[in-house]
Structure formats: structure tokens, C-alpha cells
Image: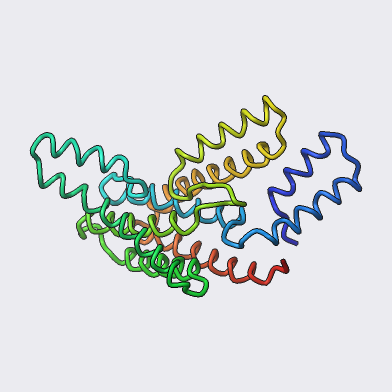
Amino acid sequence: MHIRFESVCKMCYAKARGDTMDQIGTIDSQETREECRIPRHERLHIGMCLALVGGFLDIYTYLLRGEVFANAQTGNMVLMSLACARGEWHKALYYLVPICTFALGVLVTEHLKRRSVVSWQRFVLLLEAFILFLIGWCPQTVPNIAVNATVSFVCSMQVNSFRRVFGTPYATTMCTGNLRSASEQLFLFWREHDRAAGVKFVRYFTVIACFCAGAALGGVLCKVVGVRAVWCCVGMLLVVSYLLHRDAKCVR
């Protein structure tokens, strides 16, 4: 039987509040109906799996592809600007490439969305899996800029395709925004006793924990398997694609 982590947290909260078992059962039934009304790509278990992939890819490029974090582009923009200030145009171009491929990933997903491709999020996941499968065949002699730019493209498609969990904005390939939002919701829960804020905090914290777990898993597998460790992400993305297909059968 599939037990939702978030529902367990809510039931524990209700018990601590002193609700009876009948009230708790009513709460769980309401949450089940609410989950079925939420778009399947916005459900928490989908975000958890994608955060695992995001953390894995971040540590993969850092350990095996030139100590670069390819998921987010803030660092690349800073380094590109520094290179321009020093007149090191070849270095500036080096950092510009992943920035451009990240932007390209957004353009691709927006195009798919507007073309109303059936199950376009699943198509993005399968495309990600295919690209990462090819990356797993690239030896470390392949220039890091090519691999990192490709990973940036993959991460861009993912973060732009899965932007909300239960209607709340979040990211699966970076954690700064999630950490800010989690801290805000924790404060609202603690100071104003806002139950909804407490639930959102649990969601954000869960996604952050999964991102860290993905990075830890990647650190272990990169040492054992090497460049083919990225195939673990391929498997996880295929699992997410299956979950989206399965959840589509949920009765709304």
C-alpha cells in the first residue's frame, strides 16, 4: 500500500492538536481527494524524484566534469563578467555557452507547451533520459564544456517543466529559492500558527532533503562507476515518467 509521506505528517500534526481518530480519518480522506484534483506533475512524490535527479547531476558535473555546477547559471554569469572585465574573451565564451544552452532549454519547453503536445512533461522527461544516456557514453576525454552545456540544457528543461508542487512555486535543480521559501513558511507556522504554512514547509524541506540525498548518492556512484553513474538519473527519470502515467488514472 502506498503511504504518502506528506499525509503522515499531517496526521501527526492533527494528533498533536488533539483531534479524534474520526477527525483524522476525515482529514486523510479530504487530503486524498485534494491530491487527485492537483495536476499530476505537481504532486510531491514527483518533485521528490526530480530533486534527487537535480542533486545527482550537480555533484556529477562537479566531480567528473571540471568541478562545475551546471544546474544553475548565476556562477557562470559572475565568472563570465569577471572574464570580460579582465579581457579574457575565450574564458568569457566558455561560460557563455552553458548560459545559452540553459536559455535554449526554456525555449524548447515553452514551444512544447504552446504546441499542446500530449503529455508534454512526459516527453520532456523521456528526452532528458535519452540525452543523459548519451552523456553516460562520453569518456572524460570529451571536453567538459560540451558535457556541462548539455547538462545545463537538460536541467533547464526540467526546472521549466516542473515549476510547482501543489500549486506552490519550487525548483528541482537548485535549492536557494526552496530554502528561502521553506524558512518563510516555517516562520509563519511558528509565529502565526498557520497550518497551511506548516504543510508548505514540510513540502519544501522534503524537496531540499531529496536534493541533498541525490547529491550524496551521486558522490558515491561517481567514485564507483565513473561517468556512467549518470545512468542512475536515466532510471529515475523513467520512473517519474511512469508515475505520471500511473497518476493520470487518478479519479478527479
